[in-house]
Image 1: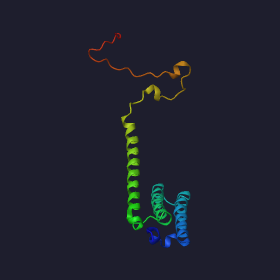
Image 2 (image 1 turned 90 degrees about the horizontal axis):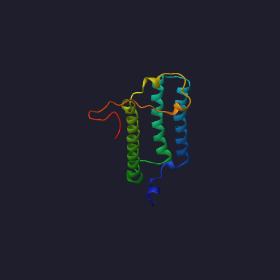
Image 3 (image 1 turned 180 degrees about the vertical axis):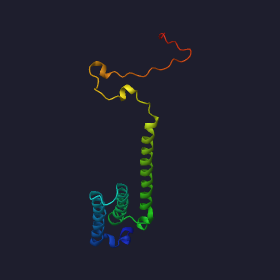
Image 4 (image 1 turned 90 degrees about the vertical axis):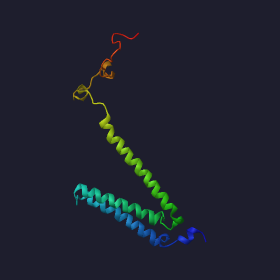
Length: 144
Protein backbone atom coordinates (compact mmCIF):
# COMPACT_ATOMS: atom_id res chain seq x y z
CA UNK A 1 0.00 0.00 0.00
CA UNK A 2 1.56 3.33 -1.04
CA UNK A 3 1.44 6.68 0.82
CA UNK A 4 -1.40 8.01 -1.35
CA UNK A 5 -3.65 5.09 -0.56
CA UNK A 6 -2.89 5.32 3.16
CA UNK A 7 -3.77 9.05 3.16
CA UNK A 8 -7.04 8.68 1.28
CA UNK A 9 -9.87 9.96 3.41
CA UNK A 10 -13.18 11.76 3.11
CA UNK A 11 -11.67 14.47 0.90
CA UNK A 12 -11.26 12.11 -2.05
CA UNK A 13 -14.95 11.22 -2.16
CA UNK A 14 -17.64 12.98 -4.15
CA UNK A 15 -19.08 14.46 -0.96
CA UNK A 16 -15.65 15.90 -0.11
CA UNK A 17 -15.37 17.55 -3.54
CA UNK A 18 -18.94 18.88 -3.26
CA UNK A 19 -18.21 20.28 0.19
CA UNK A 20 -15.14 22.05 -1.18
CA UNK A 21 -17.12 23.38 -4.13
CA UNK A 22 -19.92 24.74 -1.93
CA UNK A 23 -17.41 26.38 0.42
CA UNK A 24 -15.58 27.93 -2.56
CA UNK A 25 -18.82 29.31 -4.00
CA UNK A 26 -19.87 30.78 -0.64
CA UNK A 27 -16.41 32.27 -0.06
CA UNK A 28 -16.65 33.91 -3.50
CA UNK A 29 -20.27 35.04 -3.40
CA UNK A 30 -20.25 36.69 0.03
CA UNK A 31 -17.50 39.25 -0.73
CA UNK A 32 -19.09 40.00 -4.13
CA UNK A 33 -22.42 40.65 -2.42
CA UNK A 34 -20.90 42.75 0.38
CA UNK A 35 -18.95 44.94 -2.05
CA UNK A 36 -21.68 45.12 -4.70
CA UNK A 37 -24.43 46.08 -2.24
CA UNK A 38 -22.10 48.36 -0.22
CA UNK A 39 -23.07 46.60 3.02
CA UNK A 40 -19.82 47.62 4.76
CA UNK A 41 -17.51 50.63 4.59
CA UNK A 42 -14.92 50.33 1.77
CA UNK A 43 -12.03 49.54 4.14
CA UNK A 44 -13.99 46.90 6.02
CA UNK A 45 -15.25 45.38 2.76
CA UNK A 46 -11.68 45.14 1.47
CA UNK A 47 -10.53 43.48 4.69
CA UNK A 48 -13.44 41.02 4.50
CA UNK A 49 -12.60 40.19 0.88
CA UNK A 50 -8.95 39.55 1.78
CA UNK A 51 -9.90 37.29 4.70
CA UNK A 52 -12.33 35.33 2.52
CA UNK A 53 -9.66 35.05 -0.21
CA UNK A 54 -7.21 33.58 2.32
CA UNK A 55 -9.88 31.14 3.53
CA UNK A 56 -10.60 30.15 -0.06
CA UNK A 57 -6.92 29.35 -0.60
CA UNK A 58 -7.05 27.04 2.43
CA UNK A 59 -10.26 25.38 1.16
CA UNK A 60 -8.71 24.76 -2.27
CA UNK A 61 -5.50 23.37 -0.76
CA UNK A 62 -7.41 21.00 1.53
CA UNK A 63 -10.30 19.81 -0.65
CA UNK A 64 -8.80 19.92 -4.16
CA UNK A 65 -5.00 19.78 -3.80
CA UNK A 66 -5.17 17.43 -0.77
CA UNK A 67 -2.35 19.24 1.05
CA UNK A 68 -2.15 18.48 4.73
CA UNK A 69 0.58 18.02 7.35
CA UNK A 70 0.16 14.23 6.95
CA UNK A 71 0.63 14.17 3.16
CA UNK A 72 4.19 13.18 2.17
CA UNK A 73 5.34 13.59 5.78
CA UNK A 74 4.60 17.31 5.61
CA UNK A 75 7.10 18.07 2.83
CA UNK A 76 4.46 19.30 0.40
CA UNK A 77 3.11 21.72 3.01
CA UNK A 78 6.66 22.88 3.82
CA UNK A 79 7.35 23.47 0.11
CA UNK A 80 4.11 25.46 -0.13
CA UNK A 81 5.10 27.59 2.88
CA UNK A 82 8.52 28.27 1.36
CA UNK A 83 6.91 29.24 -1.95
CA UNK A 84 4.55 31.58 -0.09
CA UNK A 85 7.52 33.16 1.69
CA UNK A 86 9.31 33.75 -1.61
CA UNK A 87 6.21 35.22 -3.24
CA UNK A 88 5.71 37.48 -0.21
CA UNK A 89 9.31 38.70 -0.39
CA UNK A 90 8.99 39.43 -4.12
CA UNK A 91 5.68 41.28 -3.69
CA UNK A 92 6.87 43.27 -0.67
CA UNK A 93 10.19 44.08 -2.35
CA UNK A 94 8.47 45.22 -5.53
CA UNK A 95 6.09 47.45 -3.58
CA UNK A 96 9.02 48.87 -1.60
CA UNK A 97 11.05 49.64 -4.73
CA UNK A 98 8.08 51.28 -6.48
CA UNK A 99 7.23 53.28 -3.37
CA UNK A 100 10.76 54.65 -3.09
CA UNK A 101 11.23 55.32 -6.80
CA UNK A 102 9.08 58.45 -6.62
CA UNK A 103 11.13 59.88 -3.76
CA UNK A 104 14.41 59.22 -5.57
CA UNK A 105 13.44 60.56 -8.99
CA UNK A 106 14.64 63.95 -10.22
CA UNK A 107 12.03 66.69 -9.95
CA UNK A 108 10.20 67.60 -13.14
CA UNK A 109 10.91 71.08 -14.54
CA UNK A 110 7.99 73.46 -14.16
CA UNK A 111 7.71 73.97 -17.94
CA UNK A 112 7.05 70.26 -18.44
CA UNK A 113 4.55 70.15 -15.58
CA UNK A 114 2.57 73.12 -16.89
CA UNK A 115 -0.68 72.06 -18.59
CA UNK A 116 -1.32 73.30 -22.07
CA UNK A 117 -1.10 72.27 -25.69
CA UNK A 118 1.61 69.82 -26.56
CA UNK A 119 4.41 71.20 -28.74
CA UNK A 120 4.36 70.18 -32.37
CA UNK A 121 6.85 70.11 -35.20
CA UNK A 122 10.53 69.10 -35.10
CA UNK A 123 11.09 70.67 -31.66
CA UNK A 124 8.49 68.36 -30.10
CA UNK A 125 10.96 65.46 -30.00
CA UNK A 126 13.85 67.43 -28.47
CA UNK A 127 14.57 66.75 -24.82
CA UNK A 128 16.29 69.61 -23.03
CA UNK A 129 18.43 68.61 -20.09
CA UNK A 130 18.91 71.02 -17.19
CA UNK A 131 22.17 72.98 -17.27
CA UNK A 132 24.89 71.50 -15.10
CA UNK A 133 27.02 73.81 -12.97
CA UNK A 134 30.63 74.13 -14.03
CA UNK A 135 33.11 72.14 -12.01
CA UNK A 136 36.28 73.88 -10.74
CA UNK A 137 39.12 73.55 -13.23
CA UNK A 138 36.78 72.58 -16.08
CA UNK A 139 37.12 74.37 -19.42
CA UNK A 140 33.63 75.75 -20.11
CA UNK A 141 34.50 77.48 -23.38
CA UNK A 142 35.06 74.41 -25.51
CA UNK A 143 36.19 70.86 -25.56
CA UNK A 144 39.79 70.18 -26.69
